[in-house]
Image (cartoon, rainbow over all chains, first blue to last red; front, side, top):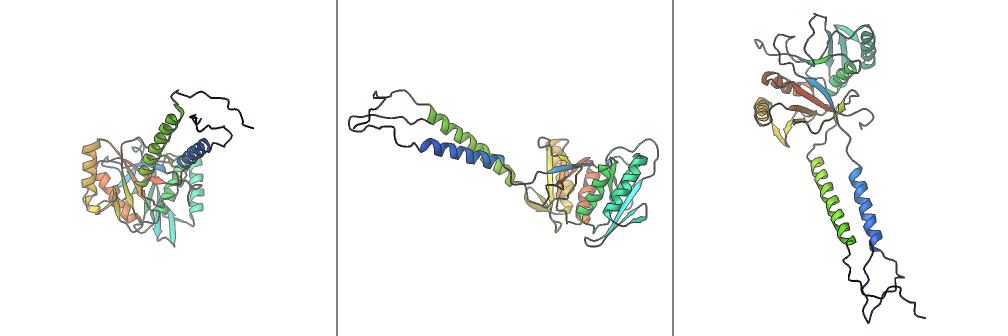
Amino acid sequence: MRRATIHSGSRRETGNDVAMTPMIDVVFQLIIFFLWTSSFRIVEHTLPSSVSVSRGSAPGAMSEAPPPEEDFDEVVIRIRGTRDALTWEVNETPVESLAALRAFLGQLASVGRVAPVIVHPDPDVPLGAAIDAYDAARLHQFRVAFATPLEDGEP
Amino acid sequence: MRIPTRDRHVSLAFNMTPMIDVVFQLIIFFLVSSHLVKQEARMELPLPIADSGTLADEDASRSVINVRADGALLVAGRVIPAEQIRERLRAWRSEKGEFELRIRADRDTSFRFVEPILLACYREGVSNVVYSVFRSKDAR
């Protein structure tokens, strides 16, 4: 910013003094710019899912896509326990860890991805652990769903 | 010795530079403050970690339910009982039409606190439900 000089009979600016105003202006602009552009929050992503509103699928299943025409067996991942002691089962076969579950899903994906994966966590299981299993299935491009039991007699 | 001045005439020209400076400062100030207000509205939660998540679409017509670790459900900063979820979903539907329900839940909350939301969505026919997550490289 160029500072306007006003000359009067009694006071004349020589132009030798260092003009601080433009420098302060620029510094403020830079501070505001960097504060604005740097985000202090972690970027959030979304994990798509959708609740099946069609009646007649597996009770309470929240499927991501309509079920296929063919009747393929489902891969049901049961997660039991609490935060400190979680256990996993795939179609009632125990799996020792989340890493083993991921490996199993990888093997299954190499055979085919037609079977939908149903993640069925116990009520006490932390959501983080349920999402871990859900995410593992999604990373192998399975159709995934959360299972939630409906009340008796509910369609 | 007196240093000669280069420019002796009185400058009557209207100087636009300070005005542009001020206008820029104001524009940036209002942009920054509105951005910060938007961020404030988002409750800070340790979200679950998932690498298959996609970048959130902020333009979509959406409603958010926050779930704290203790199971409290928060809508627009207020705690609501689980029995009111269906009522909320109906209200959002009549207000927005088809909408995306975003569940921002603490990763340590029990699945039992998320279940009522999914069941309410099933019963009210809300099909577009997404979970907010962090990528593993971003998560603290």
